[in-house]
Amino acid sequence: MDKQKVDILISSSVWDPKPWVEGLSKSDLVGNIHVWPTQADLTNVKVLFVWKPLDKGVIDLIPNLKWISSLGAGVDHLMTDPQIPEHIPITRIVDPFLARDMTNYVIMGLMMHQRSMLRHLDNQKSKTWDRITYKPLKVGVMGLGALGGHLAEKLVGLGFEVFGYSRRLKRIEGIKCFDESDQKEFLSHAEVLVNLLPVTPQTVNILNKQLFSSLPKGAYLINVARGNHLVESDLINALDDEQLSGALLDVFWEEPLPPSNPLWEHTKVTITPHVASVTTPNSAIALLLDNLKRLREDRELLHTVDLNKGY
Ligand code: NDP
Figure (cartoon, rainbow, N blue to C red):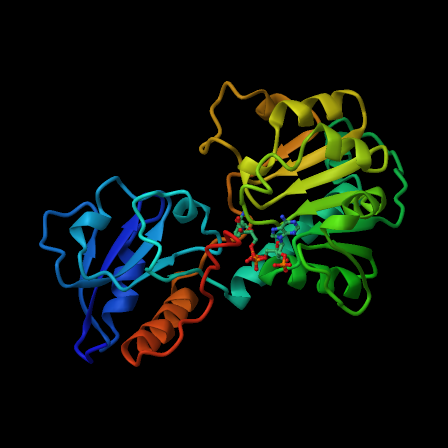
């Protein structure tokens, strides 16, 4: 690619684009930065940074587009968008801070569950002295990628018995690993199930009645990947039937979660508003600029998405 400064378009319908614009504009690799929606001529734009679905027709306005990056770890908002041409490489954020924050969130949820923290908080309100006991827990991590792999290793360090599940069989010290052919066996161990899979046609609705019935009775679910993984009505039934003892949910089919959604009021569900791990612009910008340098030097981009796998 020619070595001129590169013009960028940012489309972020959820996050404030300001810190991204400010951070990127400090680099001498970067030319004009446009923020969607804009009336500007985008002919010179070569790079598109996106968080959450692109408006229809945006790609048509960028005839010289060379690279698209998600501003988060997930790329489901790009994989299902028919306007994105197959020849444009798509990358995503793989950032140690994102992995650290996800791990910390899951550990928080796991500990709150193991130590019955919500019950202790209730008991405090009624001045009740109830020494609820706790037991060691076996944790199943679905998805052993950048986030799930990091989490699984940290959980081993904390003394949990950890079971891991991925598409291809992994070998990770201290973790009993399973692949798709052994899903049932994996699930049978998971007293706490943490979902860190990407959304693909194979994983949509994977957290369903059948899967819940393969977990040990009274298992606890932590869904931090995507709402599209979960059949919400199946979860509610599994909680009401006591097949599951509770769930910590950070992601939902519809976000913000509508006030009418019954999950809000379910006594066994704890909800957070998609904050398990949020991209930190400063560290992500360093990764984006590294890839921008690679693009200009016609080198391979880091963290590209495999369109065949869909993640
Ligand atoms: P990666 O792509 O690094 O890892 C995905 C893992 O899932 C891999 O181990 C992969 O297997 C496995 N996998 C994919 N498809 C299947 C399948 N059909 N069956 C079994 N295993 C499968 O993703 P990340 O770890 O970076 O991120 C995971 C997800 O976390 C993101 O897609 C995003 O949706 C979510 N996320 C949520 C956030 C939040 O705040 N709630 C923040 C950031 C991300 P293999 O190793 O064999 O390829």
